[in-house]
Length: 210
Image (tube, rainbow, N blue to C red; front, side, top):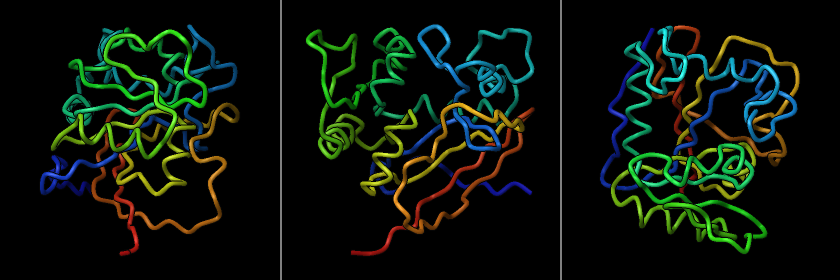
């Protein structure tokens, strides 16, 4: 069964959307994730769906309709929030994640050199989210990285999760949802799409009023 709703921004309010590929046992990277091997040992399997079964393994736009849809949504976001470690493992995306949108890199200790391209180092989570929302306007904000995700979840600043569940058990590596407080967080499934070798799940976080 596929449940679909229009995932474009509702009511002109920008949402923070965590977007990550992960294994069934909850890892977003294998062990030994280092520059040049950002997804760790054997972790590239988590991004195989980006080629959608096509011959071009370097393509970042899947050939299947569900995969193309979710990637097109990513490319419509108006700003990016990312942890410094993830940013550096991705070589800063050359200073441009997509379309020249502003990138806010969360770090406790900004380096002396400015971040490349459209990226800016930010030390305060709430300030980073506020600046990302200002930059994004009525578009959503893309959130990347396990540590950044955990920090924003702890602060109650994540609105939706878009998880690309890959049918593999990595067994070790970097988990997405480690180090969270023992709070019960309700999720509402708003969309489920089946692609080749991946299940795209989108959840809305249910937040208590007030």
